[in-house]
Length: 247
Image (cartoon, rainbow, N blue to C red; front, side):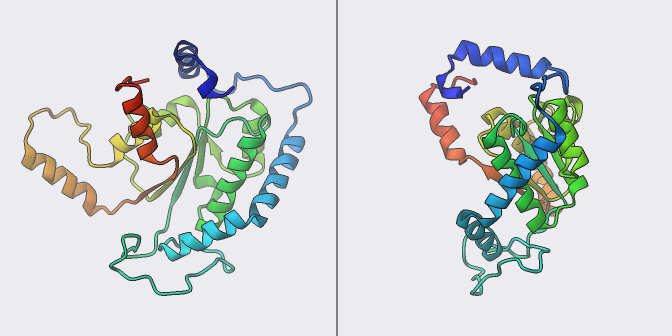
């Protein structure tokens, strides 16, 4: 159901259930199958490929400095000035794509269209299917089987997902494209905490020079993180509207 239609109590109960739910225990409907699910996903991919929205998005990615390995990829029609706020020092290449909060493709049309866009993007960016990582606690066995058999990506269990986006997430060491439309703010917060220069070593000395050195060391590795998702300012406004309530 819609998050906006849920009470805070119901939503917290849903969150608690999702954090303790074992991977793959969500049941499939009686008529669900890999063949049917893949047919539905394939149809969504064809529609997404032909959508003007997608063509415009890929062209704008190219103009912003994102690198595509597709021979027919849209290219910039003009040279981007290095003074532009969107300009990049080098073409952005990604070794990994992480897809979170997708929902169940076998049960949701919205999930299939989101997955279709992720598939088109991963192909355009040249991310190999074994480097496309997916996690959602509502994945059913049919979802997992379809994603694996059709080489869409690698589904993660809860433990492996926590390494990427849990409360104690580890820093990602390769350029990563995070596909997270409509994820809860806590997931963004976990990923950002792990990857944007915040020290997780437990050092509480308060040494500002040490903080600067750690930030410099992180930035020197030039690991790029790009998010496809909701605008962070939207979360900020919601935070203010809820008077800082962490939920």
